[in-house]
Image (cartoon, rainbow, N blue to C red):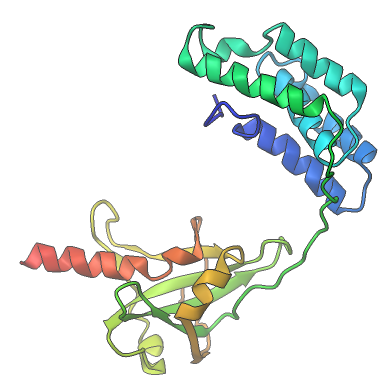
Length: 258
């Protein structure tokens, strides 16, 4: 279905349309320009029985949010709601989920039927830098009060809004912060608990959410990255997860050896 709830924005396709709309505004374009842009980008979806209605809901949501809802777009949303277009995917009218969706649509239309009293300012593109540099050695204070060690292997600024740091956990857990020698040894954390099958815990971390984690990180220094060091990962994680697998792996080994 691509939806995880009955709300207007609780849908993957709606999020895609609204994301594209916002991105166009970030480039300094007007609401009218952003409207034309998403019309063109999602043209193939307009005739789709599922995504077509969602497009108009998303467009109305964005136009109203930024204070310039086209009456024709509002009229199209009203036709969709009145005609139950796209409601088949929510089950029979008597089903709980269908009732929740209908209630969400009615509430949404009531909202957009009135001018937005506090339109949101168009977003601006904020370019960020990676939080660290390749070779940075990080002491990670873990949730249990002990320290782990993590080495920054690479950074990626290809998306300047959301740069990322590629970081590998080392197999280190102590009451004392690691020394630089720990990082030079490169004793990578190999995950053998559950179904990890010896995989190295190397993940990309976006800049979002770093602020809460920052007090638990200490930059100890920087060492050269070697050609033999891992340089890629297809997985991403939030900063709050940095170092957590060190504890998970140690607890697994201790339990297994008990």
